[in-house]
Image (cartoon, rainbow, N blue to C red; front, side):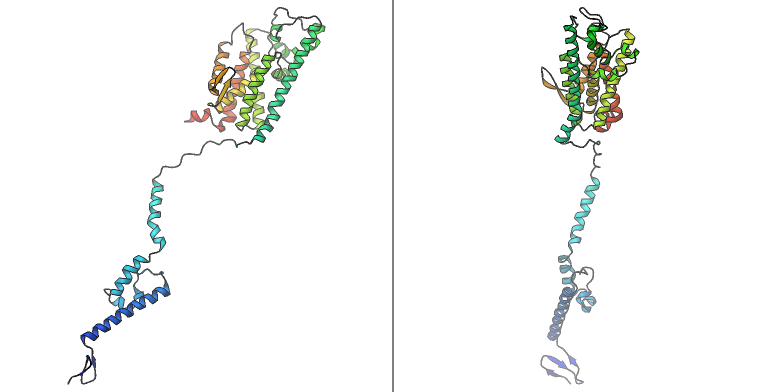
Length: 358
């Protein structure tokens, strides 16, 4: 026997049987209950478990019924909306790494260059090297002028240069004359000659490089020395290296002169800093071949390498000339030492060595 109780039906035994409308109401309540459970789990646990992979936060009914609307809402909408920043950045980082791997390797580092020098250190090295050398040359030049003035006061007529006096030019004097004692001292101690070598005056290998008897010779050599030595200091060449280059160039030019005079059977004395300057200029031309240098009466700059090649070519052409009083062999000897010194000690600063390696 059945009787109607509201919208529900009961059996005689008292069992409750909901109607279709009431069943729908219970299903909707179940949906809302599962959705509230999902929100509570979301606020309680945060985003530690992505919804797309783990739907346990939706409650047991969502697991039993994957087609449940709340399960779909949690797994798809919330899972896509609450992805972490690391997950969003992962593809971008992967693309950036792939792009970096496709890039060519970076070029090799440039050759080791000397440290930059400020103006104070530059001027300090000039005071230690350039100006003392120029000052010594000026003092020796004045000593030459005093010796020649003494000889003139004693009634002796002098030739223009020590070279002309040595080879027997007109109006020359005999340096063994007692009236020319100071001039004899200068010829014996401040010029390079085979006679001085035979008589054991080895110090003239060094003193001849600071000796100038004429003003034009002194001015030209000192301007050139200031330019080349100053450029070496600005390029970062250490002071001991610069001193070794200068002394070595002077000695190499002396050896070349002595060999040339012995080959020609000439007793021609030599003096001047031309050999030192040739060595400095050639070494700097190898280290900085494209550096621009100016020449008197030429308004445009000339690459240092081209300038030194021109000097070497001219000295080679005039080497065997009987009319020239210039020590071309000394220039060539100094230049040869400059090239060797660069290859041994200065190639780490770049220049011609790097060009040859390419």
